[in-house]
Image 1 (cartoon, rainbow, N blue to C red):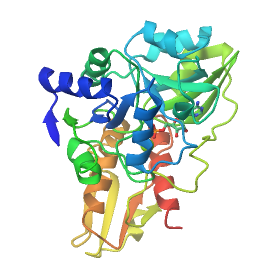
Image 2 (tube, helix red, strand yellow):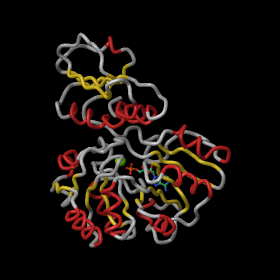
Image 3 (cartoon, rainbow, N blue to C red):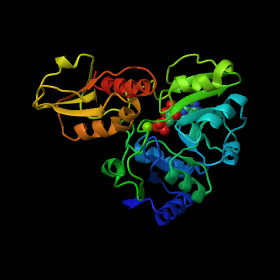
Length: 318
Ligand code: AMP
Ligand code: MG
C-alpha cells in the first residue's frame, strides 16, 4: 500500500527493514525496493518479488562515510574524490567488498556496488533503519523503472506492504555506475551523472577503459515497456496513426492529429528529458498502442543515459 513519506511512515518502513522485510521507497533516481543489505534472507525476498536473476548484483545504499567503510574493504583515493564531488547523488561506486556483505547481494562477486542517495526520504530511511539498504529498482526485472509511487503500486502493489510516496523522482534515470580499481575507472552503466563530469573530477589518475555495461547490460534488453519501441531520427517519418505513440525530445509545432505525442522536455533540456523519460514511457505503455516511436536525442551528457535506456527498450522487440 502507498503511504505518504512522513516521519511516522518512514519509521514504520524502517521497522519493517529491521525485521527483515522489503519496502519500496523514493530515491532521486528511481523508486527502490529495499532490504537490510546485511541480511541474506531479506535480500532474497527482493529477488523473489522482482523475479530478478541471482547473477544480477544489487546496489547497497548508505547514509554516511562510516557506513561506506563497513561495506567496502578498501577506499582508494579516486573513490574518495568521487564521493566528495558527487555524493550524495546518482553515482554508484563498485569497490572491493567487506566480509559483512552476503554473497547474494553481490552475486558472488568480490566487489560491491555502493551509493549514497540524495533523496531525503531515502537518507532518513537508511538512518532510521541503522543498516545499509540493498535496493534495485522497484519493478519486475527487465521492465520500465518506476519514477512515481503509483508506478510501483501498479507493478508490485500486491507484493510490497509499504510503498513510501515521495512524489516524482527528480533525476528519473538510474545512477551512473563506475568500477574503481587501483588507478583506473571503468564505466559499467550510463546514468544520472554524466561521464564527462566524472572525468573532470577523477582527472589524470583515471582511465575509462570501455563503456560496455557488465551484467545485466549484457542481456539483449532491459528497461523495456510491453509496447514495441522504435527509435527514429527523422520525426517526419512517423505515421500520424491513432494506434501509435511518439516520445519527442522537445516541444514544437507539428501537424500530427491522431498519434499520441508526449514530450520529454520543453526546450531540449537533457535534465528535464531524463526526469520525464520513464513517466512518458509508462503513460504510453498503459495505452496499449501498437508501437511507440522515440526520437533519438543527442548522445552527450545525460543524453547518453537516456539513449542507453531507449536502445535497450527497442532491443526487446527486435
Ligand atoms: P539496478 O539496481 O537494478 O539498477 O542494477 C544495479 C546494477 O549494478 C546491476 O545490474 C549491475 O550491473 C551493477 N552492479 C551491482 N553490483 C556490481 C558489482 N559488484 N560489479 C559490477 N556491477 C555491479
Ligand atoms: Mg533496475
